[in-house]
Image (cartoon, rainbow, N blue to C red):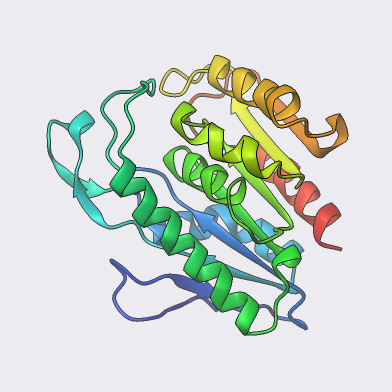
Length: 229
């Protein structure tokens, strides 16, 4: 059963494992979303991986430039979609630190960082990638669902030379974060960060817009099962 620790607005939802706890997945939602909105979507993965603990943090409510200043859940400010080269340094640093705190808490509770995976959708994917590819913890992997890698974050990634597994799904009909962003980012992973080809799983989906479907969930489940066993 999923439980909410504290207020639903700012505290993570935690789905405990139903068998012996062997790994933790931190799932990071997109802009304008809530962590609760993903519970039914990820349920097939939760059921398939009974030893995995799930943590779904909730973004703070911020004034978002892309939304004409409207306050909505957002990990950092976004000026435009498709994403521009604008960079909310303070917002990103704050949200990266929040994910780092979750990772550290899991390590202190006995879960090795190598058994912790970050998974994110859209803005949450960008945040997950920036965290996983710059952290000093050796994570088990990171998954991007329709995400991107902000260019201003890449120098720090190149200095650390990460080597973790990456799963990347992207719809071919995505107009908010077009497929070209995923293609360019995965090229950066292979050529800029020199990740081995077998560490980067890049999957595209005909007709899929800026969302996930059963095929994405199935592929993500298989990838998680492979890296967490």
